[in-house]
Length: 287
Image (cartoon, rainbow, N blue to C red; front, top):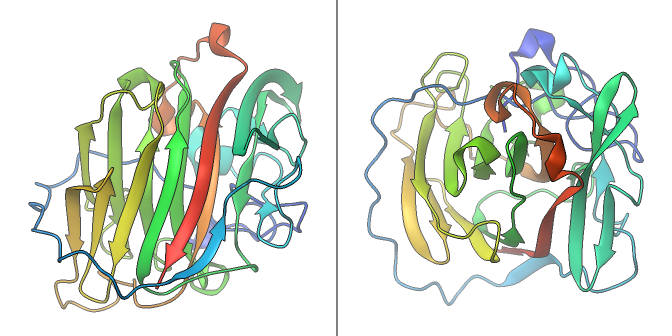
């Protein structure tokens, strides 16, 4: 998703706290603007047989997310997590739970903290982070105008350098007003949505709300490649211009969330869609 500049970044919340940023937590998420011409995808490397699974959550145990792996952002963040979002994030089981081997992040039409909707944002901040590797998330997305699910990453150093200097990798974003249109982006100090210079692309992926798809990145010191079901859709390269452009040589943590409305989700929210959910079958990290 998107965040706001350093001087507006808020501090991270506690555990039980976690997932779209308030006291101590990552900064809010920015909304992509019309980007420059996207980088043409390059042919992916031959199948990697060297990387090994180093972290995963299969969501097969219990009824609640594993607190040794995940924490939550709680509340409304600053200015709707920097994006005018309409939800209040909770750690309640009605918003985040495990059912039938899947993580359920559910948005509901209910008032909390001055907002008319609740949802959840889960992060691995303080639990796990990685530099380089392959990240795979198998997920089914919600359908309906006003939804804005995201699978993304932020730099571990966000609380010291702020956003966008910390870097942001958007493995998947989708908004209900553009059904089946998936977005991929990277943000840095000098390439970000607030400047209109983010590295970004989008494409139609049929059936994102009716079927599970595998959203994947291959991340190295030279590039970040974005895949859906093993098809390469976009490459964000390291152009050798330094960390202001490619800060992705340092650890990043993972975020899963379902926002409502906001700058990218749009001002129109169809209340008939609630409750609605993002389902995640697994998260796997290989290095």
